[in-house]
Amino acid sequence: MILCKVLGSVTATAAHPAFKGRRLMVVQPLDEQQKPLGRSFLAVDNVASAGPGDTVLVLREGNGVRQLLKDKTLPIRSLIVGVVDAVSA
Image (cartoon, rainbow, N blue to C red; front, side, top):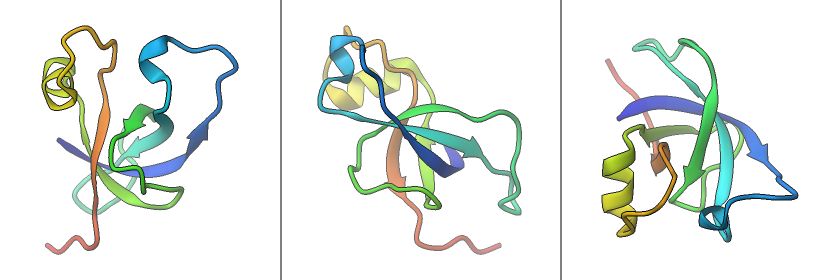
């Protein structure tokens, strides 16, 4: 899992059926000091409460995502699994 900041949501006029009823968010990976690290990417919001500016935990491993969602056929690689309240060093 990696720490990320939610940048915003994505609206698609056409999408794979696996995304029906699921929110798709743009997230930015963060380093240990919560500074941007690398390129942003898309993640499905599994907690249904993540929004722009939130710090979240993202599972970025397709097989683990499919196990959590209990569907071996989903083409989802990145999943928001928690909203972070605080980070301390």
